[in-house]
Length: 248
Image 1 (cartoon, one colour):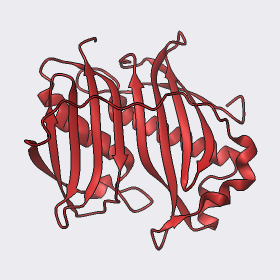
Image 2: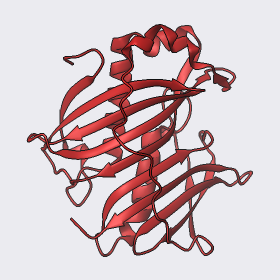
Image 3: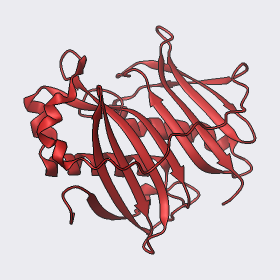
């Protein structure tokens, strides 16, 4: 890390970071974002210990991503990240992933909030006020909507039970697990090997150990739409759309 306002790190893709096609997995991207956000927050002073003092934990609300390349095993990835302060109860953080030549691999914008560790209710983010001078108000991505031409009126469905290995230290499903769930449904259907160009995911409610999810999904020429509903009450847990192109 060379600049306190911008996090810098380099990661070489390991065997655990790639999928069966030899490409960087969606989960690897999620893990790198999570680690960069945690390390940077810790460096700036509002990391795990600071939040524990305030009985607060970070919860990811949503991600917007654009993908430009598919890195392979042993490729070197440069990660840059900065936080953008907060609006209302939403804290904002952006990421850029580049290859060893400095060419962009992916850009992501993320929304977070704080919840009380015990009550699970939202905590006002004014506990971040002492750190406002470390924010960079620069947006890496414009707002966008993915054109979804999938037939959501006739969605296929599968089930997924939340297992012990899905749960993180905060007591709910780790956000990276959702990327695995999405890939596990999408990739076997992606017989034309279309590339993911854009992606959005919204996390709408917490999911805990033992819960059964209904994964509803639909694939079209240009998009893949998947949502997770809690079987017990039908409440939506997450919603994601992938924008697809033909390029490799």
